[in-house]
Length: 224
Image (cartoon, rainbow, N blue to C red; front, side, top):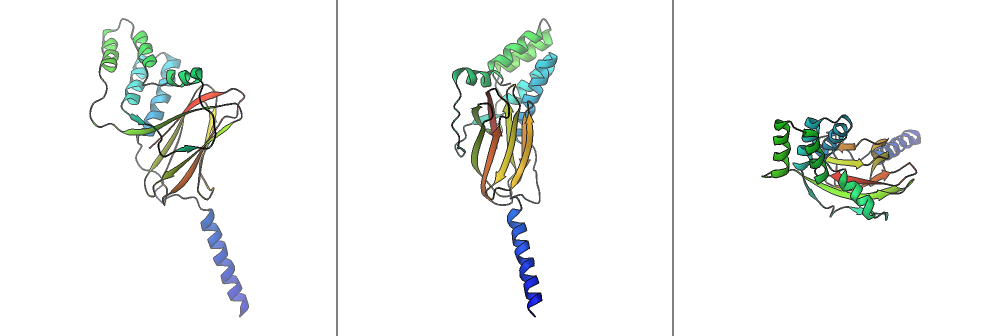
């Protein structure tokens, strides 16, 4: 009589352990791409445009970036201290497709082509009007071998996006839920990274930005 009871108790314990280790993820893992995804796409397009010297791609990247409104990370807390120096902060701003440097490069690539000149002029003269998608935007600097940890609350059954936009050095991105279960992990890369997922329940999440290299580098962390 005791054996069935023991087996039932063991199965219950195993089921509880499995559920405790299950990440806080909804059955519907992703929603439609949002503002953070658009910023990551803009940055990837911008980097390709700079390498290829393609003015049309560059104009596309600038337009994508400038269509998103940014707000500071009031609900995010960083557990590490890695404030940007003036030079490193300038490096982050200079790599922004929505910045003044991007417009200047586009003007240079447009050359004597009147159609391209008009497109660049429109970008520089007119900011997007009306309601724009909003993304949270945070910046930081990592020394070689350092990891930044950001803690944030995400709403259940609401699609979440966390994007990492770095500089020349490869950076990695990892997200864990409150139970330390892995939600998303992307290996170090120089390309911009994006994690999209939907939490099942309201909860805290930890976002880790990793610099495995030797040189310090700046980054932008964007989310919804």
